[in-house]
Amino acid sequence: MKMDEHTDPLLDPPFAALRGAMAGLNAPRGVEKELLDAFARQFPPRRWYHALSPRQWGMAGGVGSTALVAVLALGLSTQVPPPALPAAPAVTVDDGAAFIALASAERIEQEPHARMLETDVPRTALAAIGLPVTPENAGDSVRAEVLVGADGSPLALRLVALP
Image 1 (cartoon, rainbow, N blue to C red):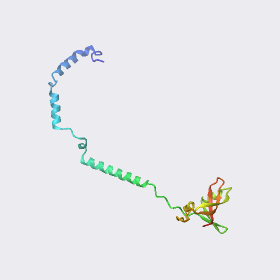
Image 2: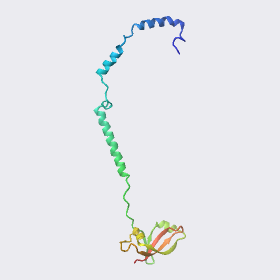
Image 3: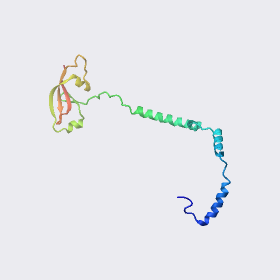
Image 4: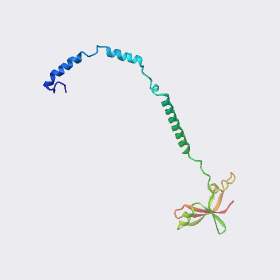
């Protein structure tokens, strides 16, 4: 939209007088360029890191180091803990022989169709429950009775004979 298209004809003479008066106020050519050059000489451009004051740099360093300490603290606290040693098995005595619980007592009591199986168990498999294993007896097997649940999972173990 041009300015002259929708102007009121009554305003044309005052606007013409205003334009004439303003034409005498324009600066000569080249003055603006000289002023900008003088300003650039007096105030040279600064690098981005000069824009921050020493106080702002100190605050940025403090915040950064605090964030680093927090990240390191969280990183160290979420490390995987070393594997725990096997807990001492729950042992109960039944008719003079010791049963070693392989499942919780609640799980054993809730099993409706448990059955007893007699089997030979490799000595290396019994190392997790505390049976000593040496290179000499690692290949041996131990006679044991195993209490097995309806799903086939072992619930308790009784060692019958140790070689």
